[in-house]
Image (cartoon, rainbow, N blue to C red; front, side):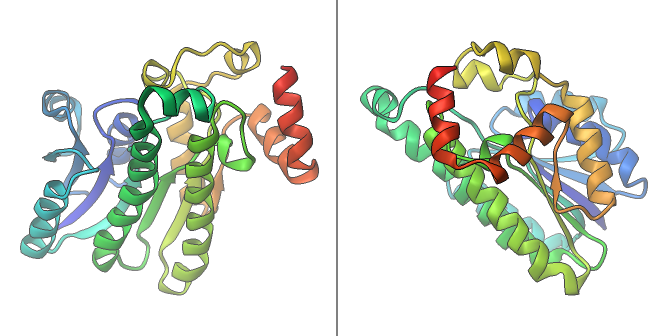
Length: 253
């Protein structure tokens, strides 16, 4: 059985990947979807051209991984694509977030880094030549960010891990792509805090376009997918300019 696996599938970019993967892989038997909100996944199943197998649970808890391991062992799917889209961010200074709920910081690390790594560990034995891993990083991965310190650090981890895996898995014919968008018009900002920067508002992207570009870049075997001229410029700037200068500029802006 040929399957794709998508985490964070109930909203945002994860949901959009589910909608588009069926056109990228036309011979899929199922898409296995992960999220906490089962009703949303059931609704998505009514919209999807490919049948969904639902794993409703919190990726910061062990139970959902037990269910996933059991299904992998029983069904032995040929996983053609793994999309790690689950994640969240919280804006504010490190001290301010810690004074509200220090657990928010570690929850970001658990979901954005540990859960992503665990999903790759479990899924990789079911992936073969031509399979793809798409990890949702962020343009925040390109350099440290004031007011987004932990989130940017977690996405830097995702980008670094993805690039290393791309090199390691190339001999096996498995393609790994890190997707690094800027701000995207999704529910993300309901959790992270409202989008206040005028510059970020100007560069706000649409989820379907970001996902379409990510799938195109994966097909082209690109290690990194960056949507839009503004984010490509940001990536170039992060390579050329000392990060201390970028951080000072963020303070002014």
